[in-house]
Length: 245
Image 1: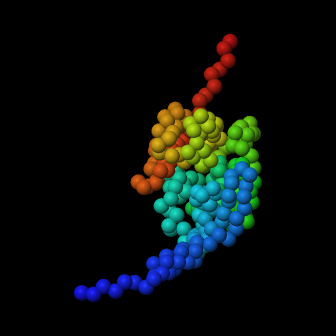
Image 2: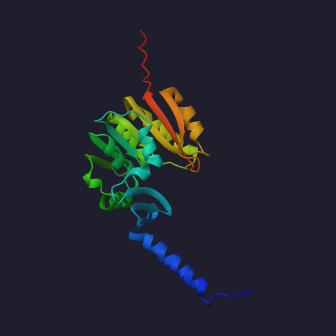
């Protein structure tokens, strides 16, 4: 049996072809650097547009209009975890590219979508590159959640659906107070969903929010994923005690 060695440089040529194929599948169509969030990129990968911030994928949008693949992700599972009225109002704490806003408008006809996003650069990129201008009436609050949430509470605002995706992976000292502050904003019969890392404060948060809702449960997105959704339904309003005589 004879052995014929490969041509010199054959391996390098193959590696170059693989790299070229990867570049063809993935293309950065826009990039900017934010003082608050770091590097922000809009990447077209195969049939999907992605918002990549500091190396993490925050949002995805199908370029061919097929949303089926995203039904496996936490954006869709958060919406499907609660029963929403067709003309619902919704508050999103943390925008990304607005994947959940698109998904919500596909299953309901929301009266108004309110978004809290602290980084104006992310807000501009989401509107320009992720088609938010075609959605239901939008209200953007460009501020820290610690400022915007109390302002909405003082204005007696209520929402059928509240999604908090701004403190994923943060220390409990920051993430727990934010989630608790959102409870008064949930309308009667509505729900709150919080996206958390399963190894951090998901269980502790569920225990903290349990007295405020008729139902609180943890929902693991996928076995290989680190996301856990804390799903809270139907807030329990405490009646104020009458003044003593």
